[in-house]
Image 1 (cartoon, rainbow, N blue to C red):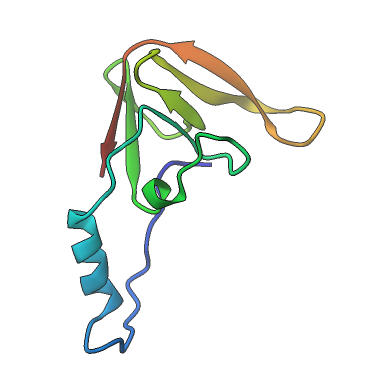
Image 2 (image 1 turned 30 degrees about the vertical axis):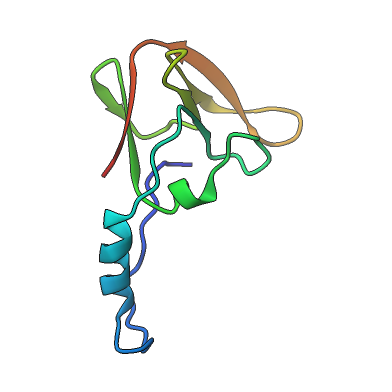
Length: 105
């Protein structure tokens, strides 16, 4: 799974506003990025309102697109270990330590 989630610009007739205009207004009202975020819905660090926007992760000055979870204060990210799956069918994750920066795209 990638951290980039796109909103398709479809026109809605909602009081004369289009979804594209509403998305532009929402871009100015983005929630603050949390210190610890996961894209796994079962995690206590999952935040759907934050993940509704496109998020980028820079790890050791390189942009990563395969991050499943991150923690800025502890300085780590979790990424899938290739195509390896655990016994429940979820990707096996590796924890990498370094400098982590999260930002909105």
